Structure formats: structure tokens, C-alpha cells
Image (cartoon, rainbow, N blue to C red):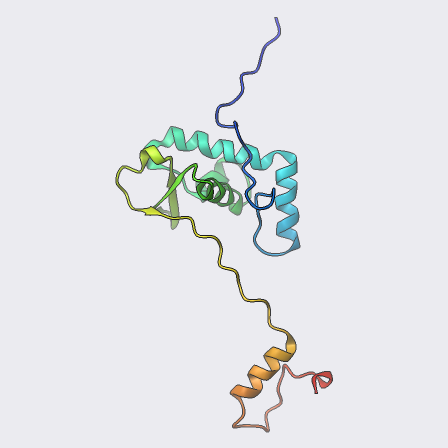
Length: 158
């Protein structure tokens, strides 16, 4: 007899890839490459599904990103990223309580009147200033002491 594998109810509709078809990344090329590999390999889907399973199992106790990372045997940001994405997409709720210096996520049915935290996208950081911008800022702050050499001023800046 051939065993028919039942679809996992927690994997239905996963992975959620809300950032232009990606689970998203924060930072540079290394972070982006890691996220793209996780999305391609199915790891993103597996960690999101594991998070939903553990949230169902834990009920009102919920789950932190750190706890999910440990359960998934992954890097420390993997669990946080999965829970943040599920929260962004409205699948789960973040509450103001924390455990082990990490905020707690729960399934919406387990909020139980606790204060919720709305999803906030990462603040767009200002672009990294150019050398000329740094040099000008240093000059402005040190105008009273022109004898000091500006460490940001390059000879090509003028």
C-alpha cells in the first residue's frame, strides 16, 4: 500500500514572501544572499510552518523569535524573521509582553485582552553619508579651531 502524505495545515499558503517575492533581509549582500537561499531551499517555509505549529501548541504562552530559532536549529535571526513576517501579514499577533528580552508572538485567538503591538516596518535609515558630507559636517563643528586637520577631508575634495 502506498502511503499518501497528508498536507500540513500549517504549510498551506507558505512561505509568505511579502517583500517583492522575498522573505526580506536587513543589511547588505550577505544578508540578502542568505534570505534568498532560505527562500529557494524551502527553509523559510519550514521555519514559518514550525512557528505556526509551536504557536498552536503553546497557546497563550506564545513564542519568541529566539525560541523559534532554537527550535529550528537556525541562526538567531531566523526565528525573528519568520515571526515578523507572519505578524506583518496579519497571521499572528505580537503582544507587549516579553520573555528573555524578546517580545512574544501569539495566535490572535490567544491574545486574551493583552495589549497588541502593531507591525512597524523597519525605519528606512538615512543613506550612508559620503566622505564629502562627513568632511563638511566636521568642518562645521570645528570652525573655531581651524588648526586641526579634518580627518574626513580628502585632498581631492578641495
